[in-house]
Length: 558
Image (cartoon, rainbow, N blue to C red):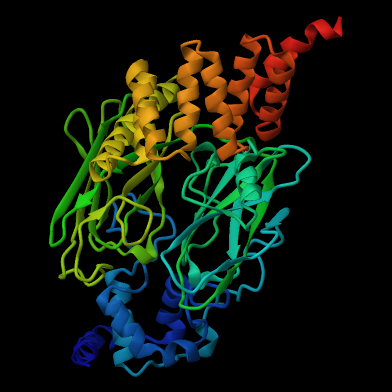
């Protein structure tokens, strides 16, 4: 109450500035603020628990509005002001805050009813009218009442007869309270669908799949995010599947989750100038009690680009995020600053005007974490050592930039640099996993792959063999050991390892394809044909298997 008395006093003091025209009224000054900053979420079908569409709605919640506005909790907007500015900025200016406080202090006068602007329409259906295509999860997923957060992927075949270009995607979950966030991806390989079908349940577990966001997109949903026609146009391919990658949180009782995706078509060509840059770390270790744990990362841009939007991500221990660019001549360009990170209101942020960064610019991020009892949001009581991981009680450090690079040669140069960067980050993550658990079969197999790609076949073989010893069910251990045997022409051993891989996962299309080539080397045409056909069935985009079959069938066509 003391805080509200202060607000009321401050509001009364501000009243002097309105003496000429009277106190601010809902009709004249307050409704435009509420409708632009609050109503998009505070209306039927959106994230907020009550509506703010009428004078009566706002008056009823006036004291609550004063408290959350004064604390900065509402409207939910994390970035600090930016020189360029962001699209759909929900933050309040100092003048808007003063108007709200003065209006509440004056007793919330309504004003002249005729002066009230039209309120936002209540959303009963799709925000932009009927979509050209609606895709809905065929079956609901049942989330149990207890346990950790769930990362689950749900596959929806698109069913279109030809490629179409997409200008807008609207995601509509039917149970928002258990959904923390969603990414929407496309899979043209059928690998995601095979994973779901093999599991025999709705969806399949995990954070990663062979699905990707097309053309540098940020196709996602978070509470409060409104659909908008701002992302670049992209192509949805005939025969591909959309994959809804979700982070679900439990409510304490069984819950059903089902969702739909609305797609809006356009005749405009797809925009291929977009690339996504990643900065961050997958090798986090934040010791219990640390109040100021800092993680930094950087990248020197090999080409000129323009930053169109950014997507930061962390969990509950993160307190502050800073991202900036330093040009070769020392000019500092702010990218994003969040002084009060909130796990529950994260999102992506698009600039009003893209930020141009010359070649040689250094991108830098700095994340600060608090893993002590001073952090009221710390999910671990008492605090424990926290590492990188997918659960909310784990931690992450991710910063994505959506950049525009118009020249295709420069895009290739950038992608090569990003591939090298990703390898460095992945190797650091693998090594930390092995420090935590030297018998981790996944980490051993991943490190073996790093060695294999770098040409150290002997060390790769040793690591794959060790992964299998730690777990005979290591799919990647068996598969990658089979690759070593194929490369070193030990064909019977390669066949053995690929078959063991397929016992663990009969849907591993790469094992089928590689086994086809080994059978071909051994002169087993029938077995090779069967393996290549299975590889293509699982992944219709496998051009190696397709070409091999074509070459094998040529003599039969003569």
